[in-house]
Image (spheres, each protein chain N blue to C red):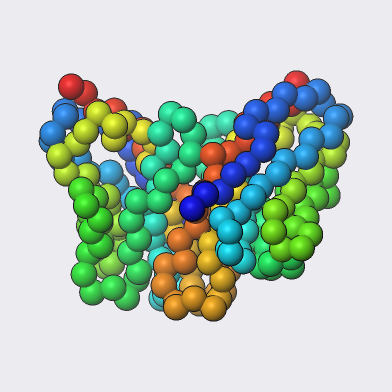
Length: 116
Length: 118
């Protein structure tokens, strides 16, 4: 069974600094996708970035990048130049491809607080 | 383009009552998903529709939960009768259909319905 682990329940970062949110996963499926979502206090889940298991390069989207280490089964989210608006819950999620199931499996989330 | 919308945003009901949650996916999205997060736990998958058909309902907790997607557009999730442990946030998400180029098929989430069963 697939599993996502986010070991940091809460993180603090100073504005303008970079922060790394950890995510490790476990799956026996050789083909899978990894997603990060942001959930601000308003409650909506916002898609941030995606990494496919066969992608050769780490994904980047603006200030977000994904540090994908396949052998270690980790997919850490890096936010550069943190802004106050980055304060939110962040969820790592995975979807296996070969099973045909499209359900996402989520981690427990990390609450990030950006301090001025 | 409008995102995924959910109604109501909040619902407070008593144990034993019935509640119906509604989700309107992004226009043109064939795939519709329901998830929920109960207090202190992870977001869990409930079920997946492709158009009007239930593709995967392996996450539905029991037969008190009934999901429908008549006509392949909006979906409803009915809880009858509601129990205390059903309290939580119910999310709906949608993604593009199989006609699109294979890719991440990102699931776009709605704002959720916060359900409190007293």
